[in-house]
Length: 389
Image (cartoon, rainbow, N blue to C red; front, top):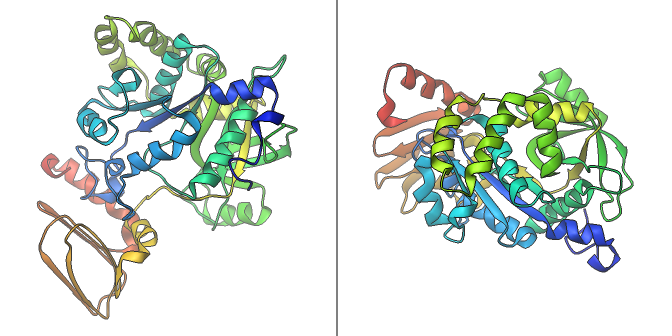
């Protein structure tokens, strides 16, 4: 993958240079991260935590990573309950760029509302949506991929442009991600890695995932999309007209004194659907989607085993320890310890353990079973133990 500066702006067309200046980043900061309970909770979801030992939360790192491309043209979509925490972490974001959801409505509503608001401000904007809770490195390789995505998305003469996704090069036959089937290479000046998308496919079984990996034709779908707002809304209107109509009405009132009244009336009535189903998959079937296969390292921090991978430099013995002032003793042990208390934790003669210690909840499992933490959250919810969720 070439570096971010590999394509000199001087050799780009005037329209392409304009496209780079019209780029506006959107950061959806939602979801609880139930597989990271009890560290991640409804009041403090995973994007508000430093899960890599870098000294920066996932949200802050996402914002900083996009600054080189969007400067201050960045919108954050998050829940009303997280407003204060988000503003503390991102004091640069003005109220005009902060979109607050009264309740979660899935990614199509969150990204669609951002697109509708931006369209009313400037119909020529090219938006890029990047989740707040992913770990990516190195930044320069990510930025290079996004730059190619912007150039590929930009409308050309007689064309509405493309919805561009950034596909992650698979490192193993994962059954936990959706996949993108890559088609022919596109002739886009300044974007040598751009390809058409044949189709999006759901999370496969193990045998199918191994076939995908062996074929070399598939990328992981990380949910990153770059697109002209006009094209994004065109497909949303065609496939989810009820959702589109509601979002458009909210967007019309967004920069007016009627914002709160209109949003409060309409938002709770909107259907829940993922952006993949509402826009990406039907747009791909219509030939309007491209992919930039990316070479950067990517992790969605889906469980505590991921925290172990991402924090190997903080190991005591063979135990990864995360937590300020952690007091951990180990002997002949391996695994992950995440602590939010000053309690002494001693691990002796135990392998691949996961310990998460918080003031009101304790999780003990193994790295092999880390994906099953969600079941504990579901059980607590069913029992009405909402105070620890």
